[in-house]
Length: 222
Ligand SMILES: *Cc1c(COP(=O)(O)O)cnc(C)c1O
Image (cartoon, rainbow, N blue to C red; front, side, top):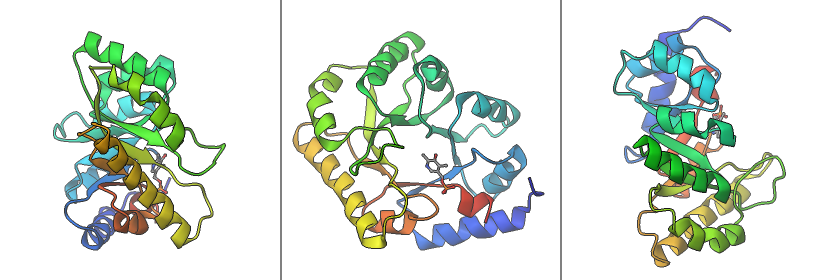
């Protein structure tokens, strides 16, 4: 891995910040990078960091314990045997992608007395490589999800399939917003967060209503 250049990281953070509304939360995805690079982004004002592996994140969190106001986001798919650690370690989990995981988190949150904000991961286009609920699957599971009273479900997350053009990406992101609206009309009043957009497509995601973008490469690798 190349040496960390704090000025370059700060420049890229500032470039992204100036291109989006201050209402949009920037999660710097640090899964491939070092704690030195995370410190550089922190010094540039970033407080939200995203990791995709629980164990790898734990090492970084321990090394960065002095930066006590970091908000940690779990964005990677979560195996059931990692759910306990994820709830203990993260402030947000973006990748609740199945009912069984939601049910497990409900029990663990009660037990651990720690309640991260949760996002339900949806995929509104066929994509065998990604997990998540389709719209019809999610609507079918809502009654069961509603029974899980310990969950603090704050919104939806999506990852688009590769290879879409801008119009297709905009359409799919917009449909996630429409699904959130449909959920609110069904009584899910807290579904306000839309976590969507990565390095390649965050600008489109923001125009389609993203409230959180998850950007790794463009901050740390570009
Ligand atoms: C890695 C990852 C990102 C960041 O992707 P970049 O293209 O590096 O910006 C965002 N979201 C999820 C779920 C990821 O796994």
